[in-house]
Length: 78
Image (cartoon, rainbow, N blue to C red; front, side, top):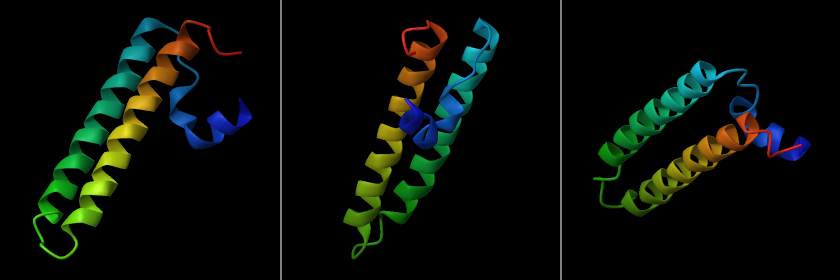
């Protein structure tokens, strides 16, 4: 559990539904902005594949963060 808190620090600590929704919105906005910037950079032919992989990792991080935030709010994680 401590390892999860080190890698996903923003996902934990929502006290109420409003806090959970704010965390989810912030994560979605950060994921959208990062994906948009990386997609602009991925149009460069030589490094496009690398930026595409980075974009996929950012999207995976955002998805796991949202799932952990919901599970933490529902007290599934101890």
